[in-house]
Structure formats: structure tokens, C-alpha cells
Length: 136
Image (cartoon, rainbow, N blue to C red; front, side, top):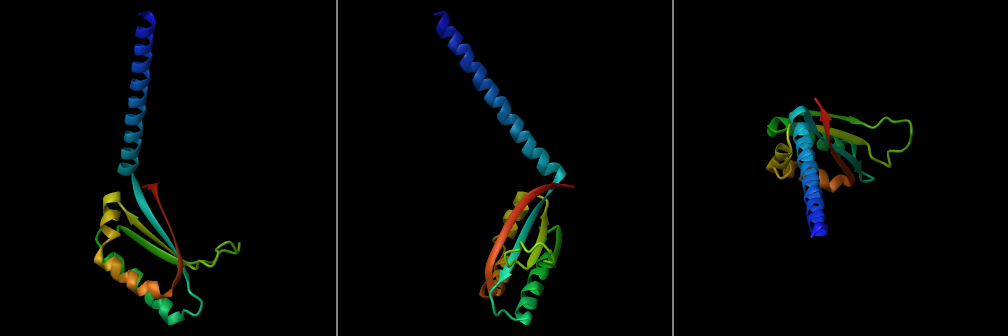
């Protein structure tokens, strides 16, 4: 009987500890969302033979998105100029800022984002996307 009671108490202890850690993790995620911004980074490698005019059209179409999609809170872009030679052919970097994952979830299927994809896709060799939380 004492062994059963001891096992029961140990089980309760483990369950309580697991629950406490789950709540702690949930609070950490909430804290990140409350005092941070969500960055959506996108890198493009264009197909060989893509003309400067076609690339300019893609740049302009992407740069128009913040004026069309209110969930985008920040935007910047630039061309790779790293001397390290590790870019693997990616030439363009775009950084979008969102205040929440919900805002990003609105952006991704947004009709204007989809229309941009139609401009981009014929010229795109590869794309690399990384999203992360950063402190405000």
C-alpha cells in the first residue's frame, strides 16, 4: 500500500511539474509576442537570363505591398553585397515586419501578395524564407 501511495505522489509530482513547465513556456511565447516584432525575411535567386527590367518589375511589385496590406508594419529591402561569397546566388533580401502571427497569417494568402507572386514566379530560380521574433 505504501508503494502505491508513493507511486501516486510521484506521478502527481511529475504531472504538476510538466503542467508548470507548459504554463511557463506559454507565458514565454506570450511575452515574446507582447514585447517583440515578427520579422518575415525573404531572399530571392533569379533565373539565369532574367533581365534587369524584369527584376525591377519584381522589386517594384514587392515594394508596393506595404501600401496595399495594412498588416505590414515595416518594410525594407536591399541587394546582396557580401564579400564572403556565401550567398549561393541569392541577390535580393526583403524584410517585412508584423506585430503578430495573426497579421502574418492575413498577409500570406492576401490577394495582393498572391498577385505579387504571379509577377515574381516566372523569374524565380529559388526563394529562402526565415521568420523570427525580435525585441522592439
